[in-house]
Length: 129
Image (tube, rainbow, N blue to C red; front, side, top):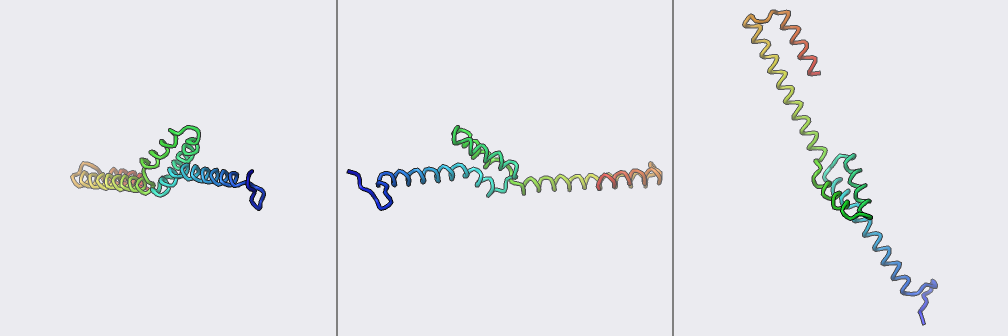
């Protein structure tokens, strides 16, 4: 004879319900682990979307969860991407400075006229903007 609790459910039913709840909570946690890793590393939002999709697909195909976790660790953070672009921009800025210095040298040597120097200088300065 099965014992009945005050809600009319047996003890085994409550244990089964508790285990199912724990299983669902654990599954959701595992799905979001790659996303949380990517977010904590400041990975770009569009790449985090890919990671979360792969995490959810991992429910059906476990390998995609592993791929999502790997991507969460190998994608570059946005701050690093921004630093690379600023380094590239400053490098380009130095190139423009060098071109202007070279133009001034050519003008000083008499190779370029004042008009040629001014037109080239204007075109280089427009490229900086």
